[in-house]
Every structure is written in structure tokens, then in C-alpha cells.
Length: 143
Image (cartoon, rainbow, N blue to C red; front, side, top):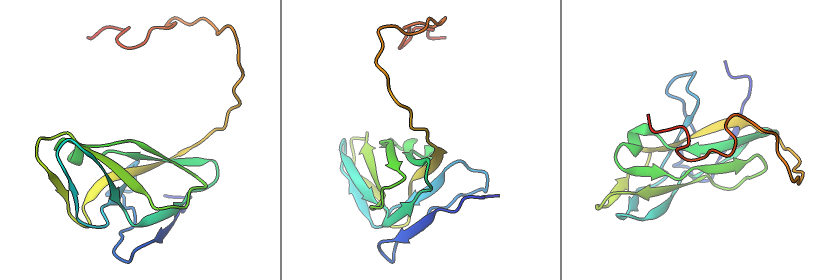
């Protein structure tokens, strides 16, 4: 099923490797290395205790889990470039008025690995016309 293998280095023996609950899940769960308190209304970096070797021409996106975010704990999306070899940290924002605790081994976020292109950027004075044009936030209506 998975023709690509990603090397994972445990930086701490307590660390858990990324894991998919189902073989076709897009994201692999990332786990808290240690008990971590998220004070109310603050951002905390949660350690995973792992580093990864992503294949060339890929990037990793650290993304939230609905089971965590439904509790008012928001994963701040992060981008992992293929050459990065440091520990994966997950920035978590506690939206609640009370502290929240991640226990060691608890799922905190997920890692999604995607193909990456490396475009060149060219300055121009004009862009092609489209039906959408410059319509941005809310331009298509609320319903």
C-alpha cells in the first residue's frame, strides 16, 4: 500500500512513531512525548521526540485532529521541509478559559506528507483574467 518509506529517528526512547489508524488515512498521528500543560489562552510547543527524513520533493504538513480541536485545542499548522532533521514540535493553542493537559503518548496532531513543487517567481504588471478575479473573503456569499 505504501511505496514510500519515511525514516523516523527517536530522539527520546519514550517517543512513539507516527501511526495511521487506518491504512488509507491521509495523516499519521503524532504523539506527545511527555505530559504537557497548555495554560488557558496560550500557545505551547508540544514535543514529539522524533525527527523524520522526508523524501526529496515532499513536504510535511502538521495538521490538527478533529478529536483534539473539538475540545478547543487548535494545532497551529506547520510546514516541515524535506531537508529538516530536527525534532517535530507541534504548536498548540488552547482556546479555552481553563488549562488543558496532554498526557505522554496522547495524540496531538497529524503529519500529512505531500508532493512539493519548487516554482520560480516572475514579477509582472498583469495577471490573466478569470471569472473570480480579485474576489476574496466572502466574495461568493455566505450560503
